[in-house]
Amino acid sequence: MSKNNKPLHVAIVGTRGYPYVYGGYETFVKEMGERLVQRGIEVTIYCHAPLFEKQPKKVNGINLVYIPCVETKSLSQLTNSLLSMLHVCFSKVDVVFVVNSANGPFGILTKLFGKPSTINVDGLEWLRPKWKGLGARYYLFASRLATKLYDQLITDSDEMEKIYLEKFNAPSKMIAYGANPRLSSESTLIEEWDLQKESYFLIVGRLIPDNNADLIVEGFVKSKSKRKLVIVGDVPYHDKFAQMMKNTDDKRLVFTGYVRDQEQLAALYHNCFAYYHGHEYGGTNPAMLKALGYGCAILALNTRFNQEMLQQGKFGWYFQKNAASVVEITERAENLPEEVENLRKHAREGLTDKYNWEVVTDEYEALFKSLCKRKIKENLVEINY
Image (cartoon, rainbow, N blue to C red; front, side, top):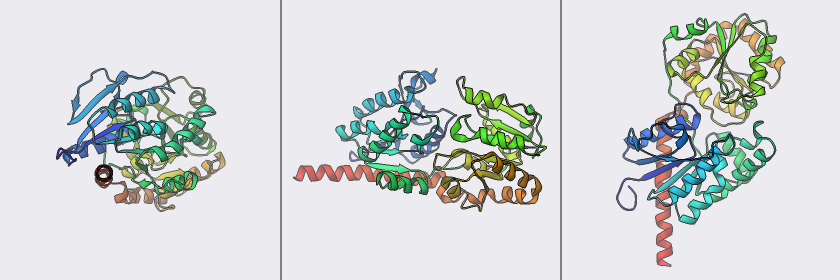
């Protein structure tokens, strides 16, 4: 309960909104927001107005506020977040929860208005290839400000927690991202692409340099595999990088584009021979958690984050950031099908409590309540003074 003996009221800013089925942050606020409401906490989620043709004020007990934005690739998120933060500061919410380090500078608003606030900073955005020049400098600046302007910094992996301490001398609270394990799906859903069980390797993710799909495609094409490589994902705009991959001349490659049907996506995960994970700059990655939860054999880029998630090789194999290494791990998988089957058999064991949505929600609920208590104590000290 808040100081007025009313239910704690949490506002969430920085996502595309709810319910929005595509995107890691959107999945996150859906899973956590719905659980918080079930626990008697009031939740308000700020949404990008242009993305929602219908704009109900409440869905599944969650309050929704639709905020406009400048509809360009680089400005839509920032303008929406700025306007959302201004709106939330004049509201009666108890705690403001912000996602995405790009929103770091807006913490000045909650500070000025005395609103308890916390931010989940996500990954190493300033290193991502898609943010070159000014974009990279802005993300570094924004991430640094996020460590100073919010009452609590949240990182989503142990390794990201270490990086923020090393780079910014900023302690943070680590709360990971949850998973929803599934044991089965409808195998006929993959027939749309002329696929059969274990007849293909799989990549899932946006076709951007950050995820290294180009490296995996290059290595796979050079391998002797007789299986197909299914690439799920795209970009919502014309892009030379994505088009270059799609133009690769190899009949083993299958580009599905976005697969928005979650049942069909589950079937693609469940029935793959092995799943490549090339994501490089994030912390706890939702696509990797899906792969574990769906029982995939995982072949991952060797990064400190992927080492953490796969527990130093207990639940997957690693390749280096070069095509030759992709060739090597692909042919190793082809030559050792029993070991690949063993990875599939034990994958779900990698989903420890750290990646359980109920545990994740417990951590956030406790944090939100502690921020409110901290604010009440500060106010009492000021009054007594």
